[in-house]
Image (cartoon, rainbow, N blue to C red; front, side, top):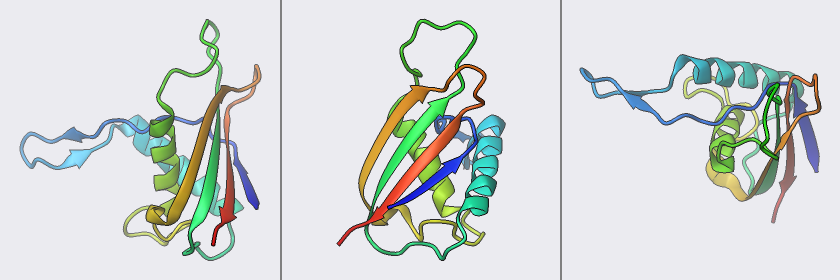
Length: 132
């Protein structure tokens, strides 16, 4: 099993918006910045060739805790956290792949979300295991 830890505050993937004139889909600038930062952090911790075999991926998201909250864990849906991380693991369409050749090779996916410790900037832990 491979464990990767990146110090990036996790953010859920936003719904795409559509340009009225061209009809093209796009994400908001905050999500684009998060995705770029996550891809850069993943390139720093992953030095091997991208995986092209079926695998199990576990994603643990430790979100930065707001100053005031009564929630036991972050509110956004776990599937939206997973979407952003899996997309970043592939990299941009025109750039070199990072960890996954394509996310269709993920055979099993487990995602959990937590609050990070106070004064912790947030992080994402990714565990990857090849499957037969």
